[in-house]
Length: 169
Image (cartoon, rainbow, N blue to C red; front, side, top):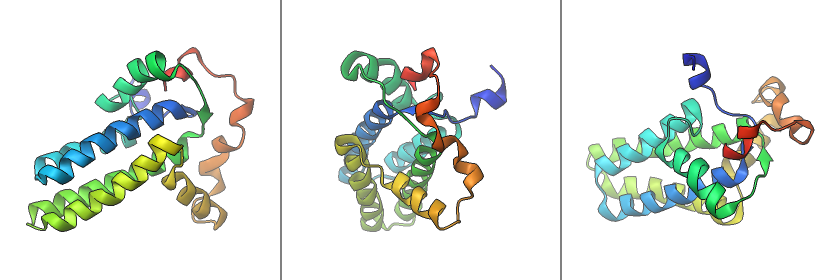
């Protein structure tokens, strides 16, 4: 596996894997808010960084989702565009990095509030399949802020022939 292929975000992705990962994020984020310690905010931020860089390949939560939760529990595949999901992971990275910095500076309540926003968004994704980051991505694309070239891959998901491993994404 080349370094370039290691650090690529999959497109398309299995929506059920994304939802499962979001559920795991919700659980860790709730613990982080309750404990309110910089280490837990750092663990959340690192998880988001790994997913932004490489999708589920480097992420423990991503691996748990694609290798166990989806095949053993969901047993479903629903392919969705990768770029909006990566954008959503980037928003999670920003929120958790802000929480980490706030916590390190002694602003624990502000860190908890930042992660509270993450909990709301990840819960919507996990439980209802509503990806707020994806909605924002679409809004920004329609306004021309995200170029069409970024989302060319988003247009024809249904026309793709999924790889054998697509269900694992």
